[in-house]
Image (cartoon, rainbow, N blue to C red; front, side, top):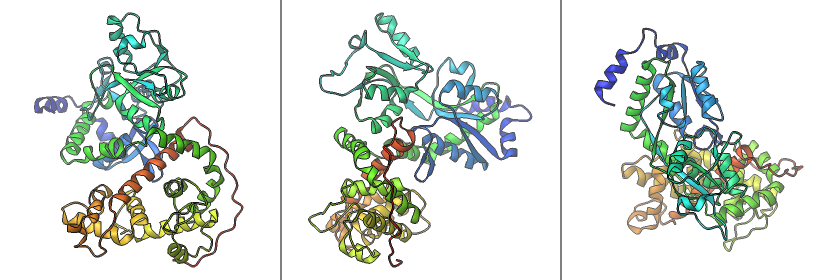
Length: 464
């Protein structure tokens, strides 16, 4: 931010500033919306790009973070006006109309308005505006991209659309997926995340240039809070925190392909209900998220209780004979025993990871060890540290695991050669399945199929 502007902002601050009230009350109230691009309850607690940024800012101010949610920007702005929230942080596009009653932070993300369509046989991808004339196009009534469509209509008078007051951008993308409507318009960030859950969605073309997004405070608020927000974003931009968080939430994992996601969704309905109760029971016993356990099982066996590999691993969690003996499992093809054994072994692996490593990195490393062996994970962590990266961050360790398949590297390790690429793919796939399960059971409009009860008693096995 230019120094002259910063001085001007400081000079405009009133005697008792909003930031002083926040620090006195030791509470920062942030309004956002529930969704994968902003804020949601994940298996390791609250998460989302906007949540993590807000949490960083609260820590920066040394205050407690309070999150309130609204489903649309209009209600968020009303919260700001009424003094019921200090900041709106929801991937908000900075527009001229909004700047009439809001003050925005520096932009931290560029978002492009795009036309979304459904991939299917016989459905030709639209390549230009003329291709979508007289089609069923719907857009959220409070979308900033309505102005984009209005400007386009000046050149293409036949362009028309319906402004939907009931559904937000994410819900309209679901209607495109289900072929209820032909097209919708949304921002590139949200589209990218929704494609993870709706594999039939694709981008036809951009509808305009990229827009800036930022945090918002009401114009009636003083400049002191905005000054702190600007200083905060400047800091996390310099130290790399902003880039890390954006990568974590928007770029960290490729979505499954269309066929893989479709098959997984079908298996959630057809196969998973038989085992949900067992997953929940075993996960609760070992303080795991049951959806994580189910995601591991799907990666291992696609929820096939009779699965047997050529190397002799068996069952829903694909336990080896040695592992089964170690954790006291008698019948690896018994679904309840197998799930119980997998949960116990995963907890054992998580507990082996050094306690200083925080979640979710701790779980990702435990999963890698579950796949490739704890010794090989430790070798990769030592290589990571030797190359100047953090052995306690999964994103750093996963870059070095593949080196275990190269003689120049594995020849220096304690445990030798390993197919180091496999645990990287393994963890990435499980994270994808986990994301889909969280969405299915908490965020989607689809009703989960009723699970079957688990009437089994606890399986007795010797402690690890």
